[in-house]
Image (cartoon, rainbow, N blue to C red; front, side, top):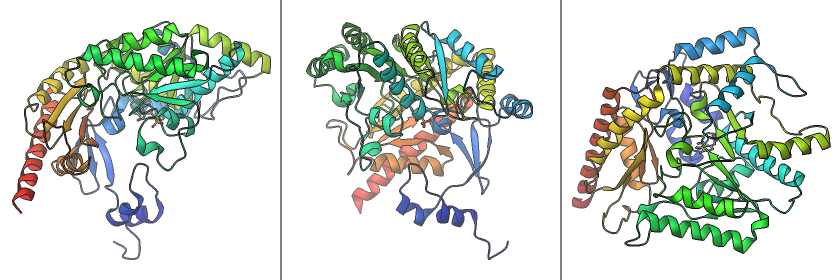
Length: 460
Ligand code: PMP
């Protein structure tokens, strides 16, 4: 090795500012360098294998070495590596993908708009709804309501929809006009003795009171993930979505389903909207849309929303919105192939089946003294750790237990994610029974380590 040449770790510390990373701490500890992927596993530069129990960022549905996706990208790169959709241009992969998404949508949808990321998609939805409401003569109807702990992205507008302090603190967001109502997390926020249905009633009543306080004529849309992902894998209480949608319909408020995590089988149905009975006016998908082999997101809008946008763009002579990469031919070709594979290999049904194993296996930890709650749906779940099951109190500051356990899991060869003290599991849709069992076994080892660590701390 050339001693004067800095290592990759040194170069990384020198020149990369990492997303979602403590920049100061990173200077000390540097990165874990992931070198290659194979099936549900990734390998670091020392050859150590990790089961990717988060599918990367909730996204690599087909695992890390799918040959058909690689071929789809290669073929498209050779044929037409780039073209755009501006000024009435189009290409086959974007047309076919839009067509496929409309076919799959759980409710009648009319048009698809492509972006590169979920954040851009959510920014686009806000702008499109503003634009449409101007067109239909409702220029005051501009506010958006989302939930505390929601995750909708990090661009200026999507970070305003997001309801997590880490994404807002220090960034001068949310912007005015973005309101947040209560998080539908029964374990944390229900009153003592309150049933799921009563909790859902209270959240719907809170939404209605916010709408009445602001004036229904000022509220454009309600924004929600069918099941909240990055905020802690929060499964809504029974009847929640029915009640929320009834309030929205009463006051002429659009319902937007952010399916960026839930879409394409994650909750055991093709869309989270189907799992939870949502009939959205607008839907946003990304992540498992292409298994993240290419960056892409899509917005689906219904006919009513489209008509306003069409009128407005006609009056102005153009729809003044679009990204260089909107509907990128390689990304759309990969997404199309990805959906074909999900359908041909019946991966939604498979995810439902594997999901039952995951949920049942995690439920066996529910009585453990460090486990407050086990929750999830399909192939997405979380185990919330507590120091005291009665008071639900954390150990020290929130995140201490979660960080320790996730670190032990990584030592044992599994990548998971601690969201505060909730450990998330979101394995690839292609996971086998043996791989799900390995997730459960590795979690069990990391949990036992955490218990030992606490008892050692107590005796020293
Ligand atoms: N919405 C949801 C529900 C998400 O989980 C995410 C990303 N985790 C986003 C939007 C933002 O997507 P991106 O990171 O591609 O901007």
